[in-house]
Structure formats: structure tokens, C-alpha cells
Image 1: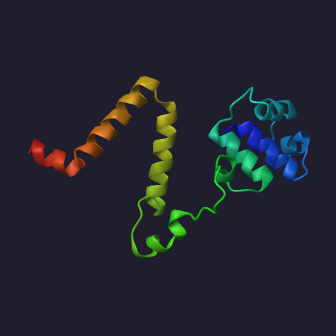
Image 2: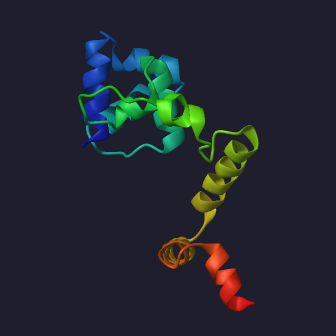
Length: 133
């Protein structure tokens, strides 16, 4: 999926010009054009600006499906089960993790992901702690 093509399609559906999007986002019109034509790939923060300008949820900019998406926090399953990331503290921790991952070097990020895969395959940290004890 080309993000730029999706943005352009949504902008045209809402009868907005690139200048309108530029005013709503605080971005230059020429930048909006570069994104729509695939010359630039926007950061997540910039995609959030586009989503606010288009008055749509962020996921719609990248979602290719036709079915309506139900957020985990509002699904029937989560009423009875605790889903990690819903609590305020967990949400803040997740945001901090995202910021730190963005600052990491690619090699460090790859190492961290490899460790996460290794831990998940071995059954989690509890098994690793028991084995170390």
C-alpha cells in the first residue's frame, strides 16, 4: 500500500486541496505533494497530523481492509480479560518504549528484536529465570 496514494484518495474524497491539508497540518503544500506522489515517506507523527486534518482515525491511512475495525479495548473479549496496554501506566510505558526504539541504532534494534523472539520462543522470562536459578 502506498501511503501517499491513500492520503490523496482520502483528500479528494473530502474535497480538500493540498493547500487545505497544509493549513490544517502546518506542513508546506509542496511537502504534502511530495508525500502524495511517493517522493517522501512521512514519519508517524506526520501521519497523525494528516489523520487529524482529514478527520479520520490514524489506522485508516494504512488499513486496506473493507471490514470495520473494532479496537481491542472495546471488544467483547476485553470486558472480561485484562489486555496489556490499556491501563494509563502501561500506555505511558509503551510510549516511552516507542520513543527509545526510534532513537536506537538499527543494529541495536535488531538485537533487541532477536532477544524478544528468543524469549517468546522459550516460554517467556519466567522459564528463563527458573533456569538461571
